Length: 187
Ligand code: GAR
Image (cartoon, rainbow, N blue to C red; front, side):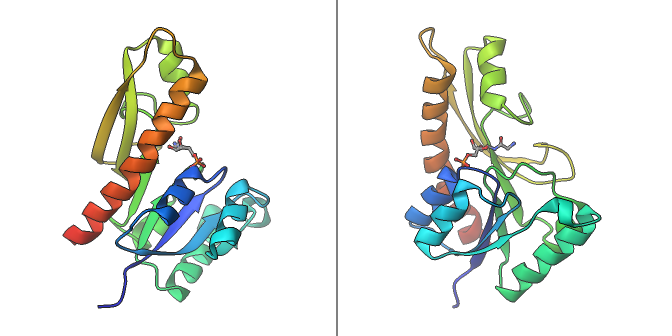
């Protein structure tokens, strides 16, 4: 049976992309889609030999237009799953319809708490005793689709935002590949 092919969408550092590349995944990551020319994740893709599709949303007149371009690339490369990993953009109807039920995201909070940007800082500043990581299906909202898996971490009195961030990232790097494998192998 040919291997399942997947794309990662990322906008920034790409530590989750790296974790997926290094994990024993039940699929091949064949494409990185990036909306930020110059993002560090592109260097990681270059080093690991993963093809990239980089675009600047400002060069398009609408989300539908650039998502149609992305879909072309996904079809060309035979991608059937999309993993968002720090892709800081809402997925539009064009992509949602083309990849229904096949787009998942990781987010550094216990959703529905603290959606959106800067979730780690928001949880820290809120003074809650625990936060965590969620993996969820994408819908038209921001970090709102059905949750597939969650794991929590305690916030200790001597934590800083940085120490908390390190702990959450370590958890993300373990959790995301595990959930991806469970999903792919169950289909
Ligand atoms: C990750 O912590 C991911 O959960 C978060 O962006 C970071 C990307 O880090 N995503 C969101 O906040 C989505 N709302 P990375 O570029 O090092 O993988």
